[in-house]
Amino acid sequence: MSRTSNALQLKCPKCHTGTQFETGSFAFDKPFDMRDRCDHCGQNFMPEPGFYYGAMFISYIFMGWFCLGFVAIFHWVLGWSTAASFALLLLVCAIIFVYVFRASRSIWLHFNVKYDPKAAANTAA
Image (cartoon, rainbow, N blue to C red):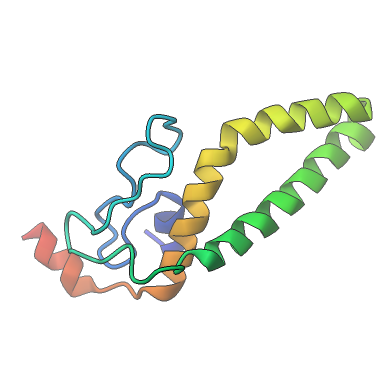
């Protein structure tokens, strides 16, 4: 699998096997609880205080463009009213919020941690 698909599947960037979060992608049970370390290779998911500050920018950029495109499509292409377009946008954003939060953290971690085939091989053995 590619780094992008592993980042979007919330897998460990070092071994591409372990999961970064305790619950599933759309779970509202513990939405912000991230594991401290990978269960398979031991990669530290909390390297330093403030590490995930950069993930906030990834989330902000994605959500900004998503919201603009969403309202533009529903308002101008499909002919919905502005109020209805924004109401649907709020509903969709409420549903995808947890996944976008998690994916932005995963992408940021994948930017900063290199894949190690030895770590993946050690877990498979």
